[in-house]
Length: 418
Image (cartoon, rainbow, N blue to C red; front, side):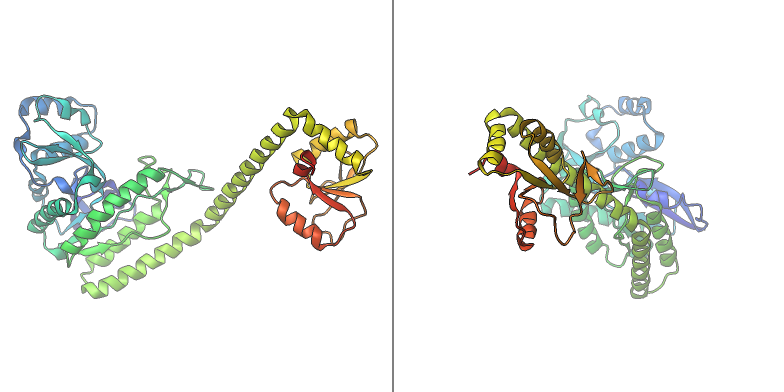
């Protein structure tokens, strides 16, 4: 077995939960600690016994409690040194968290997901919350230099594996039939922070192994830890496992890089081929939903104009009488055309409605025949009323190009005749 220590998010730890893992054994694992907080003064703790009791009594896992204590006591290096390993696996995804700054002790700690209220207790020095984005580059890179120095004191570059981690916002739902947008704003903020730290650490840890993040990965709503912007589909973890197997072969770095690039390309194609149909169906679903929403908003606006203004209803009737129109047709079987057909029967009973231009499995509506939109010609009628309000301009052009004898108007012009 190859022994590994981990200082990174659960994304790395989950690789070794795969059933095919028969090569790697995890010895030490730490997370929830920002790479910006590895150095500092442990004297921020004023009442160690009270702090210890408060954390021990807190309702969270022992794993989280341990990581909180490591961050407050600045003992990460000591913790990782307790068990020797062949490799140290790291990422800088905890750079996504904000920080607490203790001005009297010139020390940062991590505002993570653990027991945040301890920073308001008397057993710690006074601190202020700091937005990680507010760290200027000189300060951020100085803190990351300390992070890299600590890592390199423990392991040689050839023993270090740096994972590129990205927060995603495309999630495969549990039913595996749709991809949804999830956590978009959070993922944008996290990626901005993670990328700044990753790009710098990758440069400073020259000679270490790099596992790049693959395109086409997705979040997984079925992840055993629940939905989160760093919880991916199974193929991602299998890709990382196979990448670690390549690294364990101890090839020259330039040869290893080619093998890892080929592996990444393979899994990108695999994920694309597996999920492309789901993505296409999703895009169609949202496109249809957006089109429906747009159409309904147009309907609401039109009906509000029509129903609340009696003069405009009179305009419709007067249009037919003033122009001596005794027959018409509709282009589009829409809510508006159905309403107007009913309205015409009551207000202009002698008006003959010849047909409705629409693609439909039905032959007629209210005994008015359907004529296909793609017919090369349309039967004689005096007036064609465009009632498909989404594509009015395109339909005008189409009917004009057909050189019909009929007049052409639309439902808006009926309300507001010139």
